Length: 252
Image (cartoon, rainbow, N blue to C red; front, side, top):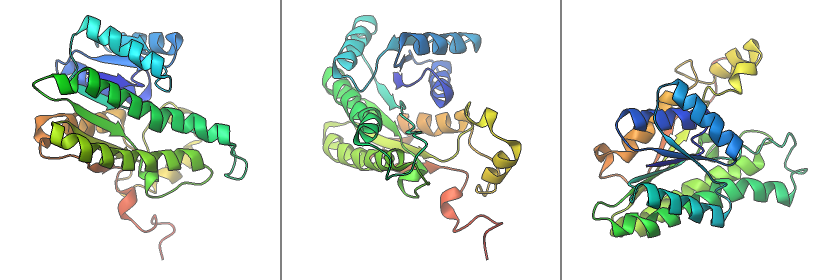
């Protein structure tokens, strides 16, 4: 199986989950340095996984990555489209340039599509046991956050892409689903002011942000036979953020 963006944060936890369940697991990072750093982090956890360098926005690099997977393993059964450009431009939508938008969509939407197309053509449609695709989206696809126009729009596009791919690939035996997280405790949380972190947690009815392991569990379910009759689904994992009208300190 392959996890794009498996070199850091939640991607590491997804790689670890599948590797510990016995899957031969490949992951990619956009640069040699980031991929090596991910390999070191996984090795420190005692996880055996194979790192590949691939900027998924580059079709030639995607093809080269699949050449290497085919050479090493000969097959692929699960693809997790986790790689993301966070679109942290630090400005509002009126200052976001067309190039900024393109950079975010190039990874989050076009990149995920290119990797999925390659996985299907190269492996899934040639194997007796068809493959499974899981995308990572966000609850911001449905409930926007401020000054993240490119990111929110790209996540909405991913949700639509998942439904479209599921519709067209379902008759061919390939399932496509999506996990839509909310807050996830990543390295960005480690530098937050404690008061801000506490305020964010008030947005979560469960009182805490997700761990990477929480998201990995949803991804593992969607990739498993336990979800064999599901396709085109967007499964939200956001501690209940999306089910409430307002957090308790704002509700009236």
